[in-house]
View (cartoon, rainbow, N blue to C red):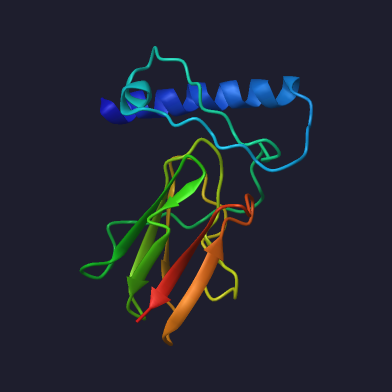
Length: 159
């Protein structure tokens, strides 16, 4: 029941986002910080969404899709990164080479999680979808971004 309410709230937010994008003028400049959605808003099907995409953020989805994750072979202690309100959480983490990282898009628009050195890439993850990737070998920092919204960034440290 909670999943249905969440999906309904995401759908309402996406409709509001699309309607707002069609009626607003493009202003340029730095992206604004989106308003957070409370858990009560996300759980209530009758709540209206006040969250909006940052100015200049594309409202459509990019081509391609991420591979959905199953109950598969994620290693013990594997990392889960959640995308919400145009942010990665956590935005910095330390992992071991070969571990599986699960990326959950809990936002109202499509995102990617792509290493700037291209050592990993989820491809496009649609709202409500999940993707996984394997941590590359070799130690060090791997900065990453959302290629659709490059102001979103984080760092994966392989240790």
